[in-house]
Image 1 (tube, rainbow, N blue to C red):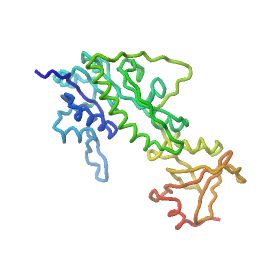
Image 2 (image 1 turned 120 degrees about the horizontal axis):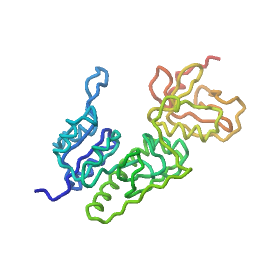
Image 3 (image 1 turned 180 degrees about the vertical axis):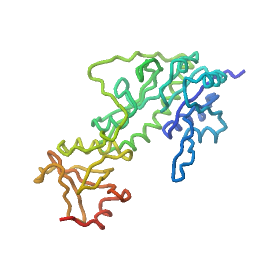
Image 4 (image 1 turned 90 degrees about the vertical axis):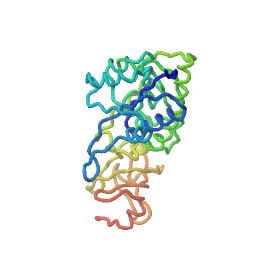
Length: 308
């Protein structure tokens, strides 16, 4: 009989792979993996496996891909793995019958310093809101989403120009390391959970929709810059320039009072392009003009012809 606690891992995207990999490197006893069903994608719309499934198969780990988490067949298959604890990293919301099954409960790795930024997009919203710091939290699942008792936290600084993609990659590693530290502490009975405290100052991190990506040029340049980096590289901040839809991926701020009205596109047609905000200019460094590929602004301007 294996003396190590039996762990079932639940996750889907590449962000979760780092944590699953860390479990194996730490010689944890991962008895199975739960991930999303294969979905059609790519040019031929062929079925695509999740990043977690690909990693699990490559390491000979059993995989379950339930369409419905409340399915009796899924519950039975999961029960047969006899998990002592479940680990969730970037997965769907679990029904109580699933998260309460293991004797040691279900542990979640979340990309914020809870109780701040509960929700689906904590990385994006922390940057959009101009935070200088965020972090990772391990906590125990309970009924309401992201409200369970906190186990451990690790802080991450957010430099002024860091993008959501850069923070994602850093948080992926920090989260994996915190997961191992948390599990070792749980298995050694050397950790005490702390209930979350609600307050009026809690900021939320809901799913990002298209309307959240649209730039309001009447706002200060710093706020627009934060929106751009908070949505880079995906899904990308959106605006219209000369009637065409443009995505912005990298910008900087020019602290100079605009002569033009907010939203005016200004360029010399060769070396620079910027857009007027309420208090300054947003300099465009990396964009995707409608019908074109993403490119540095200098490359774009080589083929640009002003309509004026």
